[in-house]
Image (cartoon, rainbow over all chains, first blue to last red):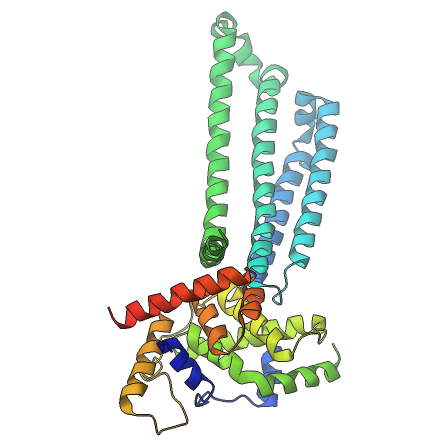
Amino acid sequence: MDQLDILKSKWQSQKSDFPQYSKVQLTALLAKNSSSIVKWIFYIGIAEFVLLTLINIFYMDGENVQPFITAIGEPLYYGSYVFSYAVVLFFIYRFWSNYKNISAAQPARQLMKNILKTRRTMKWYIWYNIVFVMLFGLIYSYMALFNAPEFSKIIESAEFQQHTFKSVAIFMAFMALAFAVFCGFLYGVYSLIYGILLRRLKRNYEELRRMEV
Amino acid sequence: MSSDLEQEFVEQLEANQNIVHKICRLYTDNQDAHNDLFQEVTIQLWKAYPKFRGDSKFSTWMYRVALNTAITLYRKSKRRVQTQRYETVEFKIEDTTEDDETMEQLTLLYGAVKQLNDIEKALVFLYLEDKNYREIAETLGISEVNARVKMNRIKTKLTNIINP
């Protein structure tokens, strides 16, 4: 018999010096707030939806919307409008159905998988927003350059006229860089939050996954 | 939720609370953290209870929820003040006829178990609770064969910790 089996044989006769909770105390515990990571993921998910949707609304419905429509044209504007709301609804549905699948009574590996799946949905949502902002930012920048009155001076300048392609390329590269920095920052903050929250879960999930290989 | 359900739940929890205490002791190292984890386990059990159909024993279902809470769901709170650690002798048995040497060995072994990682602790805990490999495998969501293989590796690891 190895040592663990000796411990096992004594395990059941372990002295229960644990402070025993009474029924009243246990009932009181039920009313307390959970601080589980699932709850945090849920709140952060909601915050992401609210924040990014607010940015979208501000971006698409704000006061400055008229020059925006003039710049990119009505079909593109309304098309992207409908598209972006459809996508948000899709993500909310996915987030919710993933969240609903999480149950503490699942096998540990399944539970971890479901939590990671919920987080992945939010990761895709962030990525979608980054790509959307980048893409539309660039399309808008390009179109605004030629359609917005603010840029007419630049376009009409002799230098621009001489090197049109080069100038546009420099302008677009500059805009792309600015958007990339902004998106990089957004993604960095996002990764940090989930990284802290899920470090332990990922380590344990990896451990279980390795066992199955 | 009806208070009947609540009463029924609290009664079962009271009768089985030592399972939760044992898990708390294994996964935490001071009394405050122990109480914190106990509270979270209780909340998670209560949240999952309406879906508990009684197709398994309450205690079996409880192992799963409690271990999941300890391994996955629980977030160690930062606000905790470091209070006194558990006494060095963490393992106590009622039977005092055991000689000192055996007791020392057991304490040493328990200390070694506490050094294992979260998943290994869960395996050892279920093993000590006399669960068979099928139950261990189901609780963790791995195959029975792999549970057995892992358990053998943990035994070797424990021996190495005790006899370096």
